Structures are given as C-alpha cells and as structure tokens.
Amino acid sequence: MIQTFLLIIVISLVVSRFLPVRGVKQVDAADVKSNLNNAQQLIDVRSPEEFQISHLKGFQNIPLSHINEQAHQLKKNEEVYVMCQSGMRSMQAAKILKKQGFTHITNIKGGMNAWRSRD
Image (cartoon, rainbow, N blue to C red; front, side, top):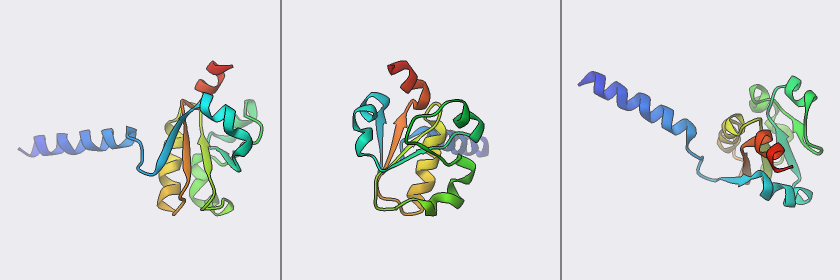
C-alpha cells in the first residue's frame, strides 16, 4: 500500500515537471520569429557559456540559476519571452516568474534547437 502511494507521488511529480504552467503561453519558434519586433523582454536562461557561443539578437541572458534574484530587472506587467536550448529550462524559469507575479509569460517551445531547425 505504501509503495503504491509513493509510486503515485513520484509519477505525479515527474508528470508535473513536463506539463505546461497555467497562465504561461507556449509558442513555436516560427511563431516568435514573426513577432519578435513587438516583444519587449526577451530572456535566454541558458548558461553564460552557452549564450556566448550562440544567441539571438535582442535576447538578454539571465541564467536559470539567477532568475529568482534578477527577475526584478523585468517588468511584471509586460510580455516576457523565455528561451533556452530545448524548452525545459525556460519552462522552469516561466514557473518561477509566474510565482513572482509576472502576468504575461511566453515559453518558446523547443528553444534554440527549434529556432535553428527553422532557419
């Protein structure tokens, strides 16, 4: 009985990490490319090393490990686009921003991998 309960908890935790966050939009790289001129806050949450190797013009590097401390640099009521390499870290960053009261968050699905595949 206890093993079943623990298994259910573990499965729930794993599934919740991959589900979209309520209130966070999910967009494809192709959709963002056409709307980037309108975006005010473009955040790349990859490491500084990854960002230095390759990044998109207009994106600011705030590594996921620093998003809690540096979120104050962003405007809570304006659209925030979040990107990483594959979309996983950016979703984590979106969750953090949502908890901090940001109201317009968009995660770029597939991240840089999807962006490069669209070129």
